[in-house]
Image (cartoon, rainbow, N blue to C red; front, side, top):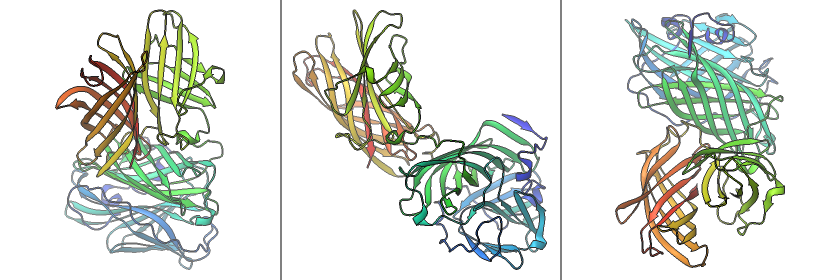
Length: 580
């Protein structure tokens, strides 16, 4: 992370709307507030009017614009230039252009202000800034072709500030919004995918710390056929009191979610990493332009320590870039995944049909490239199996990798984001088996603001060996997880049966209880496996999908003697589940 005061060209033009002085930059916000920061639901978008202007670049007619907005109220100590407190607001905003005055009227709740051409204090190719000092000081900043994103015609970003000041205390309101000419529901693409180059802009506060604005650029990926999106943008932060500029060190926006099946709107989870801390919340937006050529959205995030951030993003299609892969069922390009198992972390890179590279988490696990030439028949139609022989310096090893098939063709469970595999290696004297999960993990922070409960149900596979190695088992079972996001705890069950590999004897290893903790900032869970009140093993899992729609992981337990076998049986394996 670096601190700068050189006012570098790539960020200063966008930030200048806020960085004037604390009393005016924050004075551009109005209305008082008190209390701690609290997360609020994404606002309900305004109804879509029939566009009468062809683009935002040439406004010829008066028009109210469709928009999505987010709001923030805060109190500031002007003597120390720090935030006292603040909270997010459910901001429902209207913005109307007047062709006669060539100005705008913005309204949110009890706030309303008109900015005319006489109020323009700054005009650049990518920014028009209006100041109105009547009553409370106010600033309206409208961004069009900003930053590094492709030129935009149909969507813009806006930031409206108003404030009141008493003695050394300032009470301020902020509204961030994305507005423009939305895509008609019938024109929203439903096939293929697209990458958008995006710009972001917003403000962030935390009690006792200097408030900051932020700005940056990144990529928004949208899979129209799957109805999925993801976004990642890096940012600079600019101190509103000192003018200091900071970059790097994880200052970024991450987001992911779903595209509506009925129109061009999308909603999901958002995470903003700041020099002030990390915060999570929501994002909502829509497609703009006749054919969805552009996108716009707003986001709002907060944490329990009182930090809060609001901002907007806008972007245009970037034909030089490919959309990121978002699901296992619609891979369009090579994708590398980390693999997680009881023994550690490796990787699997899916390259194309029946072609992948595998790297184990131990040096004696033979991997490398597997192709259709190594594909062999599988006894279970829900798996694809591959075999090859290799030597990692520990002697020749015959390796078999079985991958569980995602998608609706799987007769056991239809997975979209997660899957698992089984690696078996046999040498001159040893046979080793390892299970691993992989897929599109829920990005760090996206679940941090999630509350309520969810139930996950699915299947488990594993291998078992009794205490004197006289019997080995292929294991199969069912599992469920009851997850409480509010308390960050979980419970559940795991029921397992097995078949002894030599004799074919069936064994019922019974049911076990699961319980432990969620770590939502990192999107995983960790807990114990118990039976009759005694701990017999452990379970570890990762959430997959933009909202944690799936849960997969590994487990290990010692099945007590008498539960399907005369001796204690050590069982290890993997599970995958889908939220209900």
